[in-house]
Structure formats: C-alpha cells, structure tokens
Image 1 (tube, one colour):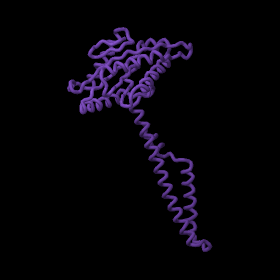
Image 2 (tube, one colour; image 1 turned 135 degrees about the vertical axis):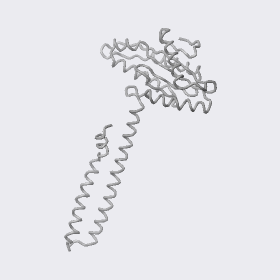
Image 3 (spheres, rainbow, N blue to C red; image 1 turned 135 degrees about the horizontal axis):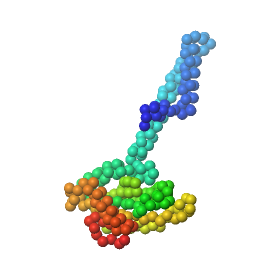
Image 4 (cartoon, one colour; image 1 turned 180 degrees about the vertical axis):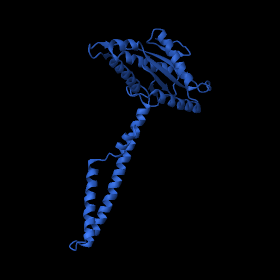
Length: 257
C-alpha cells in the first residue's frame, strides 16, 4: 500500500465527526469573543459553564476520531492479512502461507506424535479445458474445487491453491486409509458437479487426480515439510501418468480408481 493511500485512510472521518468539529470551532470562537469583550449582559457563570461544556465536547470529539481511526486501521490490517495469505480467485490459502502452516503442523504432530497426511490435487486436462472453453470457465472450475474442499474439510484441515491448477490439503491426525476415503468422496462430488459454458450452455466434465503422502512423526523424524510435499506431488504425477481421474499414494499402495 502506498504512503499516500495510508494517509487517506488515517484522514477519513465521518460526516457527523466533521460537523462536530466545525460546531466546536464556532462555539470556541463565540466563547473566546465573549471572554475578550467581557459583555456585562452575559453572566460569568454562563460563560464558565459554556467553557466547561466546550472543553468536554472537545475531549469527546478527540476520543471519537481516535477510536474511528483505530477501527479503520484494524480493518485495514485484517484486509492486508487476507491479501497476504489467500489466493484472490479461490479464497484458499496461497502457497507461501500453506508452507508456513505446514511447518507448524509438522512441529505439532511431532510433539504429540500424531500422524497426518498431505494431499496434492490437480485438475485433469486443465490446459485443454482453458483452450476449448476459455479461462473464465477454468476459473469457475477452480472456484468450485476450492469450495468443495472448504465445505467437506474439517475446521482443523488446511487447503491451499499451490499452483495454476494445483491444490494442496493438509489433514492433521489422519491416516492413509482415512485420506483415501476422503479423496474418493471429493472426487465423486466433483464428478457430479457440472460447470456450464456461458455461451454454449455445454456441460464441462471435470475430473481430478490426487496424490497422498502420509507422515508418521515417530518413524519419519528426519523428514521435512518439503519432503512430504514432494512425495504427495510424486504420487500425483504417477496418478496422472496412469490416465488421470485416479488416487495414488506414496509409497504406492493399491487403491480403487
């Protein structure tokens, strides 16, 4: 965010606050005029009361503006945090933030000796879909996949857009069998969801391939987060080489296609 933009945010006040400020200026000018000219027809007690009133109104105005500025800064900070950690199109976490969360989860799983799994997901023939139906249709498919994951993952699970058409999922306290079952359900849900081309109303069939890598913190003490991600991506590539629309595990174990 530019310095000019920051100043504009700090300088924003509501219409009521602006009106209050000008009213205080007018009251202050009138009060000072009365004090300077010392009109005898104005009781000194009235001037004193007016002075106290203007004083407290000024304090309240300063507090109101300060609180408004603090609220705007908090909102701006939250917006910047969202922009820094999420993918704009899919609203999933971005690659950088996923890697950061992965390192934390790996540390936590080792502390409590809990197994977890990492899933790498890729849309089959995504380049062909983009070329045939356009990038807008491709974007809708990416959004649908992200929404499906968000709706079917637990609150403790993490998903991110890791590349152009690649997603990553982190499933804490989940073994390989549970991850395979989740992957099958996710694949079936996507197959049943059709994206319609805006111009031709043609249904665009979409499938995904999934690679799964499991980490046992007791056995895999020297394995890092990058190693686990690479294992999941290796399994994914094997699934795509086998024709796509498949689930592949690392190390390879038989799964239903």
